Image (cartoon, rainbow over all chains, first blue to last red; front, top):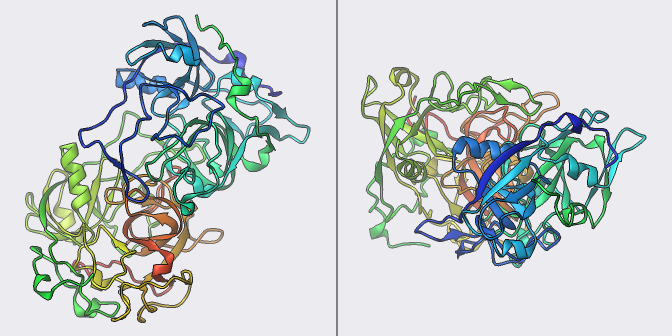
Length: 292
Length: 339
């Protein structure tokens, strides 16, 4: 993105975490939109077969978290890991058969979500230690003071198309525009933690549940209309938020594919460019940079 | 839907029929409360809690100290504006919790609007109040008391709640209409009316919710008539989406009333939210509407606002829905015998 930033003044911190197991309780079932009981995988652990660029929905899955889901055992250190880690940050595997391999962060979902090439993921498991080189919180755009940047690695911003325009707006390429009716669980939470579930993307379920969002892909850059995520997550006419779809298919009602927040500000500070290829798969390094 | 009359009094409860003088709409159509059980729940009056930082951050990035969020709030009553105080999620009365997380969820989920709450310990022991709503996350029950009783209460006082209402299927209501979080004895006092006799159970298939008129008239054929303060689009729903309506309230991201803002809503008002199905988790479903009681005041926290405890959810076509921002009367202290 052709834009002036303060990236040279950001710090990089080395954080640690581990691949966290999926968790369940002995009652097993959760409840879908029509009262359907379901038991489906999705959150935690290592989820195989879905990567940036792949469809976000259409799986027998709930709260699909592509790749490795990472937390820290200490609650305070975990919050630091969740808050300070940004989309695009490199993650190095430190233990297990995949030690030395490097992937990249694609979002947060109360876990840090890390995409690795499929052969690497196949060698990973719960309990593997990882290191995150966290960088991005505090990133600011000198020529766009109304726009707040969060959860975004400077390298990711630099690799995205668009940028400052002569009229003072920031051009951002987006794969989809999301109506305010779609905003579900996650509204009211801080925007450095977890993500915003989008309703209206229950592939295969009732037409009365659809808001036309069934074609989202993991890694898509999307624009949320009438949404202010500068200091939390709120409905606000005249504001706009840009995020990246980091989680997928949900059966749990009021939940769905979720964007992690990247940019937010007054809608008139942006110039959206509809671009079906606006996806992390296109911009993030095919071989993620070495974190060592 | 109809059940043998012999079963209609098996409710082991303390349902207090509303005084005749406060029945707003055609009474004489008691809720079908057979076979519901009551459970005695123990609540403890909550102490407000904060983290190491005293500040929360508002939508424009301004830090503020969240006064009034939980615990006992004095001087705020049903009928006051949800925007009356410079406070955060202030509720009219005492918030009840339980020290065990699972028991706290049960206290929250089984407590229903209108349930009796009785103080067991402390200087206000014996005082009787009523549940007016609940809040989510870890779970809280909001109980209203007379102000004189509330002034003698303190955090850690024990309050017993006679939980009754989950599973209620009011007599004569169409099957598509789900009632939740509501004491059976309170329903006849609220501006919610079953279809006229002989038309129940066969909701019409056409038409949409109305937006005008006043309460009091019989419902349209086959439809449950509901009168509310306001009908609000679902895109204004905030915190609470994706959470179970039996355990959470739904915050409404409403602007303060006044020039450039919207109309006022009062604590205790019934409000309708369109496009929200609250039978299980609360979420978007085209053509549905959820009715709730306004149970706490506004908040500066992004995505938060006056909170609604859902009491009824249905397809719009099953309801005869009217908004009256002038004459509407929702849940009142008089209905709860708190005056």
